[in-house]
Length: 391
Image (cartoon, rainbow, N blue to C red; front, side):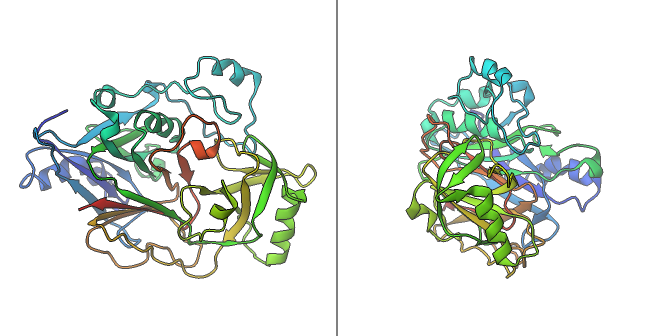
């Protein structure tokens, strides 16, 4: 590990000049020169920071181990590391014979929704002597987070993973995405791997959503398509709920839970056994409903259809651990008021994008193929990931 280097995670809105944005890494390094002899800067361009407005948000890390080595290791993972592009637009992602053939060399379990993964972690991560000591992976990425997050979760099983999907910037600086590191990247994932003895606390909430149906058991699913729920076809249940709700908003979401108990937890604090996804399509004739996930939906779990709330989204309750708090959110301009509409708070790093975030709780069982065995991508408007860091 490199000695005598600190780390900084930065988010900046595209309200500055192109030159200022693309020089943010060097600008931050120069600004921190008085408190740090050297600093590794990673981050991305976002839609909102600090209270929902424009500006720059910084998270500065100075912790060292007993030898003086930095406890935050910067890294980059891109297409050159074997990452594939999986985020194609599709209603259903059932597998094909071509994908079946590719899976024969896969290091991950077979899945009806995922092509073979061959992501190779870079040396700066594989050279970490004990992966179990890594407790947090903080990322900034383009939309292709799936295979990167999978590989990280497998190699660092005790780590919480939280990654912000950057704002698309093609009309700002002609780059698909703008990811900061030693050099600017147009795609891929930059991040920091933190080693510490204290586990951070990660929670994910969806305060911008309200229930449109009761909790229903999934009877039959294939890939990312829910075919039957108890006593009905999934699409028929959803159509009936939308008609009865009287909502003019045609966006629909699905909360999928491992157990019925988890399905009844409040959306403001659902826990690790529930996740919320966008409904991307349905077939009234066949009865199927497609959910925006690249993971398989397991049988005998539970689903509840949701719609956007028309009331203001509440500001999340912050942790009380005494350390800084990181908030990653999904912009919610059409849902009441954004959860980031409050005033800037001291000790809080906040950023939000339309693309949302990816997250994984520590100690998930990555041996399975379903969505509860994988990191989760969240682009549900108004959703908030809260990471409470130790003091």
